[in-house]
Amino acid sequence: MTKQRQVPMVQTVQKIVEVPQVVILDEIVDVPVTKQRQVPMVQTVQKIVEVPEVVFVDRVVDIPVTKERQVPMVQTIQEIIEVPEVVFVDRVVDVPVTKLRQLKMVQSVQKILESPEVVFTDRIVDIPVTKERQVPMVQTIQEIVEVPEVVFVDRVVDIPVTNQRQVPMFHTVQ
Image (cartoon, rainbow, N blue to C red; front, side, top):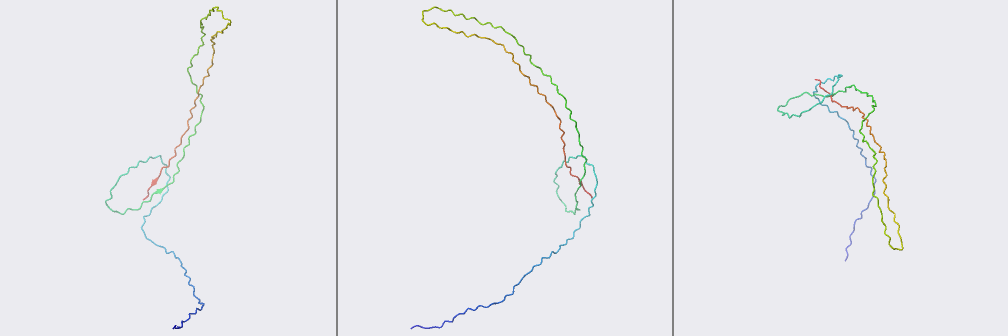
């Protein structure tokens, strides 16, 4: 036996709904921050100063801090100072350099050499073939050779060297 049941049917219906759209606008506003401080008044004075060349030797010293004090603020001002430039104009003059050198004296000497005389004594032997020999002759030849002398001439030229330094100028005004 089978049982019958009724199953409800689900029906899908489409419905158009209007959804309002929300737009968020952010506005960025700069709020100035004001702070109050007491700043000592520093007066700036321009002064033309001729500065000689100064070499600073700094020594670092450790100082222990023992008390807390209020110290006024000191501002260091850097001044631009025109330093006149000194230009040296040199005139270069060519000076001929003369050098004295001692030269070795070369002497040509003719020498007569005696060469020993070689005498061949032939013995007559009954040999059907006769041989002739050539005796080499030694000759001494004198030759005069000229040796060129090389002379070096040096020229010394002074080149001026210009040193430029920037010297920091500190001026404290209270």
